[in-house]
Image 1 (cartoon, rainbow, N blue to C red):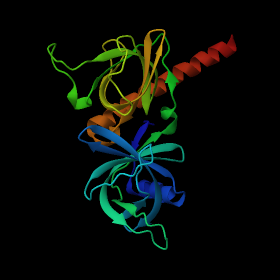
Image 2: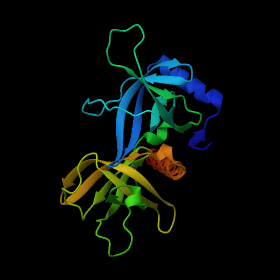
Image 3: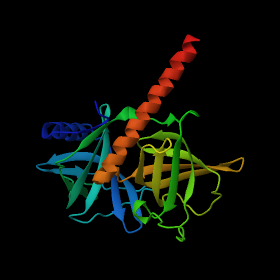
Image 4: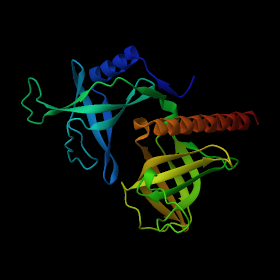
Length: 257
């Protein structure tokens, strides 16, 4: 069974109803002029063909107003899967029977949705026997520098651990402080020599300098909102599954010995 599955209408309706009944948290991914941003919300109710959500908030608690007809990415965990889709903003709606003045965000129920096995969102270490490399640059996937004369800096290094949600890498030629938490970057991941590779958008999340080597964490963003993004997500999740199988095999061999 593939890690990334497209759902039919009945499965979409079941997932949305289940998320609303449990008031499950949801993440919204927005594409803006300066790159991708992530906002956090929660399912509240269904109203015909619309979903009502709490007002999206940033990590610092600030609310973010969305415009009608704006397309945003939506992801949530339900049962044993991560569900991802794109939705269209309809507007704002008052809270029925509530004194809370904060309106709810209304989005149109999705007609397409994919689900991903939640286990591939678990970080798995890349063993020394495997080669996984990453390079990145400021500005997002579409800002990839072209040609040797480009003035855009590109950093590269080995991937330490990987999941369908992001990765951590080591980078010997980065010593800061060009990147700040939340900065949008474009990423090129390559698996093996001359084998599979993909390009994605990501956000810089953390940096730690140890013994002169930068350890850097990134979160993938926007993968559900385009065909090439879903193809990258499928490849990454397949590679995570392979690494998990290798890790399980090593564990069984150690136990046997």
